[in-house]
Image (tube, rainbow, N blue to C red; front, top):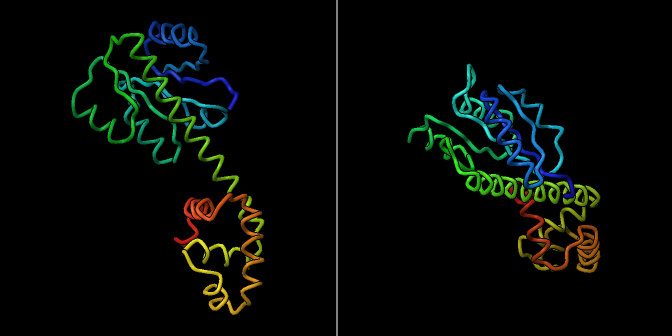
Length: 205
């Protein structure tokens, strides 16, 4: 992904928001600043890796409430919490819910940059995985029904002869469908095809 990573900063302290903007821009990152919790849809249009820095204690809707909201809407963006009043239960709750880090104020610039770097890498890898799944689903959708049946059986470890018996086909026909499925899926080996089947959840259906 070539898009510049974006860091969303949510904090009601204007000085802190501006300070973080200066720090993050100094290492080439884009920032979006918010005084209060924005609508979740504000993050949907961002392309490329992103993460969110959010204060735990905000007027009305807290950072932890926001984390719960993201989970309910299945919006998966790495979160880094900031707080001047952090306590152990709050930290445990945030981390168990998937937060990347929990930084007490005042924090060192390097600690913040390290946390942001980890969060952006997590999101970059997730987006890469999501993109691969979309590509796999598209290729799988181009298989014929028979090719899908053969692929499902091949990736459980059955031999061509066994598949032929199950589907009432000749072994030659199975080989043809198998070769076509492998080619269309872009699999380099049987092991590769098995991984694709696992990713697609073919055997869970």
